[in-house]
Every structure is written in structure tokens, then in C-alpha cells.
Image 1 (cartoon, helix red, strand yellow):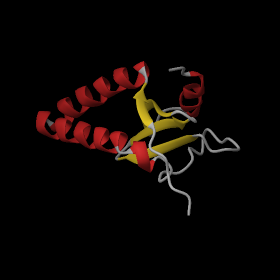
Image 2 (cartoon, rainbow, N blue to C red; image 1 turned 90 degrees about the vertical axis):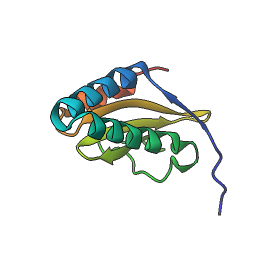
Image 3 (tube, rainbow, N blue to C red; image 1 turned 120 degrees about the vertical axis):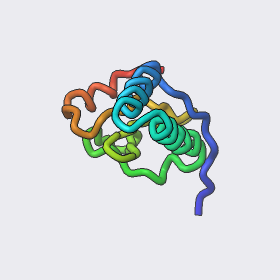
Length: 111
């Protein structure tokens, strides 16, 4: 069995903007404590990707031969990340009901 190498985790500017929207929506809908708890859960999943990046499935909206685009589903959110040789790139966090074209646009995000 091959050992999984640890990789640096880097987040995009788009993710930084998205996470503010997630918090704002959560705070308005469920309250500050619930929003903070959900954001902590999101970051817990993201920072564990340094070694567990292959645990999550390929993003079915972004298929590639080498399965570099993967996603984490948390509640009604989809966290999309890209696996490269050097690092894990967290691209976006989107609501599950967003359009497929919006999901596909994450391919063009550069870090």
C-alpha cells in the first residue's frame, strides 16, 4: 500500500469571499453560535486535507482522467478542491443548488 504524502493546503480568494457569505447566511438564519460552529466544521475538513485529500470523491461536474477535482459535501454546501503535485487548492464553497456552469467555472481559478 502506498503511503500518502502530506501536501500544503492553500485556499483561493474566491473561497475567502464564499466563506464570508456562508457565515453571513448562517448567522442570519440560525444564529451566531451555529454559524461559528459550521464554519469551524468547514475549516476542520479543509485543514485535514493535507493527508486525507484522496478520501473524498471526484467532483462529478468536473471529471478528469486523473481525478484532480474533488469535493466535500457538508450540509447543503459543496467544497471544491484541486489536487496538484505540490499542494491542495481549495477553490470554492458553493450552495448545492447553484448552477452547473458556476461549478464548472471553478476550473479557471488560479492560485
